[in-house]
Image (cartoon, rainbow, N blue to C red):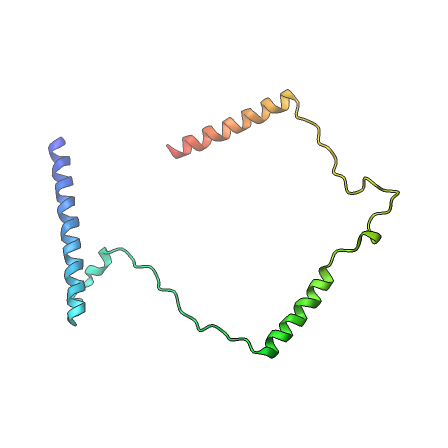
Length: 127
């Protein structure tokens, strides 16, 4: 059985070498103007797409002024109210968050059990 596996790996190595030789010859033929002669391109890896080079827009002074005006109006709407219009002194703790209670030991054990079960499930699915 080990003779068969070594023969298979040797043949696979030869196939890879021949595929790379074919690709090199096809590139050389296309550079020389011959082009490709068959569907051997399907074996090669797909090439990444080239990014398009778009021309950058040059802003005129009028366009810049109009954009500046719109942005100024936008930020004026989003401006936070001043401190004088904030919460009244009758409600000093209005913005304070409520403190959470710590977990009980039983709740911690239950959470630990659920987490370990999910890890085991993930590990089982992975294998």
